[in-house]
Image 1 (cartoon, rainbow, N blue to C red):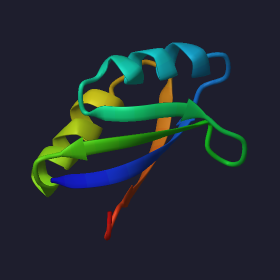
Image 2 (cartoon, one colour):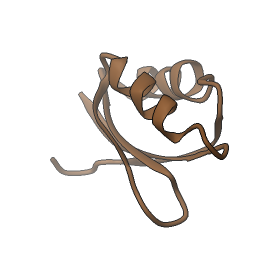
Image 3 (cartoon, one colour):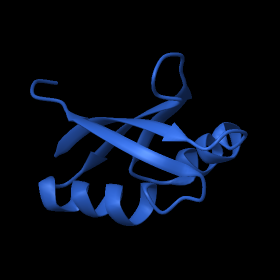
Length: 77
């Protein structure tokens, strides 16, 4: 199992809608609004690195209002 944190930048006014959509995804363990350069952080899991990439490219980056993602893979859990 691969765990990662995904930092997400959003379009103005979309944060609450996006965090709600993220929380509906089964691979998302937590999703929270944050301060700083990113607007949201999500902790996600996937069976392997390829599945993690698919989750990010097909499920997270395609949410309306998501401008940018920055993924940090957990090296020791």
